[in-house]
Amino acid sequence: MCQIFAGQKKENYSCETRSMRLRGFSTSIRLEAAFWVVLNEIAAREDLTVPQFVSKLHDEVEVLHGEVQNFTSLLRCACLVYLRNEQPAGDHGIAAE
Image (tube, rainbow, N blue to C red; front, side, top):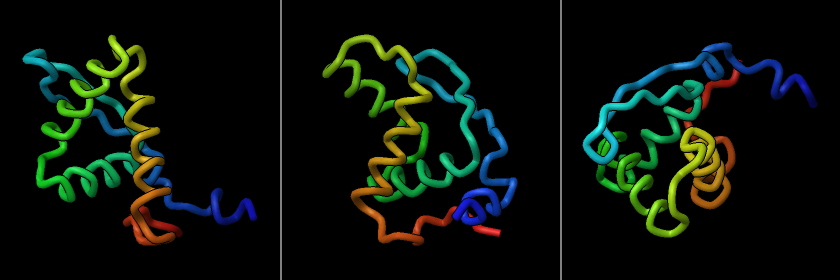
């Protein structure tokens, strides 16, 4: 069982930092590459760029719940929700070894 998880390509869990604007302010977001792949898919599905999607998500969460305490965790969880609800298993572009 662990081979499925341990055997994935190192590139999946290497970190990438991307700069973007949220509410007019420049910020950097650091996530594992696999999450950026999923965020690209979500954004494309919504006909948005990743920065547009991330900014829209941030604004909507702020309206619903107030200040966003840990936005990178929110992004990771958004990716999990997307993969659970929208994608057939194994069809999400995250590379296995």
